[in-house]
Length: 215
Image (cartoon, rainbow, N blue to C red; front, top):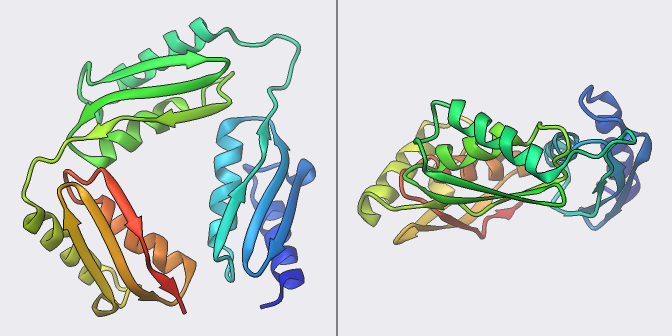
């Protein structure tokens, strides 16, 4: 697919997405690499735009240069964001109590702490990304390994085998501590994301090196 066609497909996908106002988003494509520029109203909208682009056929990589510009004259104070973020994390039953610490600076929320599962780490970020005034989220929560590397590898391979959209035999899984490396070939960007999800589904995984090729 040529870059002009890919760019138009991305613009169409952004226009179709109800969570995104594409009027102020710029799209540049080169050899399948997409650069998003311009600005959006919320951090949640920024993430939604990224997800839309990743799903478009022909996208091989993405550079994110969009800004979050909060609408309205009154800016939400950092301490107010922090108080609401703490409440949202505390109310989320997926997140262990008192496992996550929160710091806010100029609308950017930084999450730290330790959990056992990747889904708990993701849940903490999901709990606060839609709060008013948030312009960015830095998720530094650690996933502490609780099982052996061999068990992690087995669970990931099993997850890949269960996914009907993947050719599991074409994907090699290497595990060192809590770091997973994926190698091999997939057919589309969406298959690559599916393989990543399978890797993150194992307990104790805290880092992922995706070396999969799209062919």
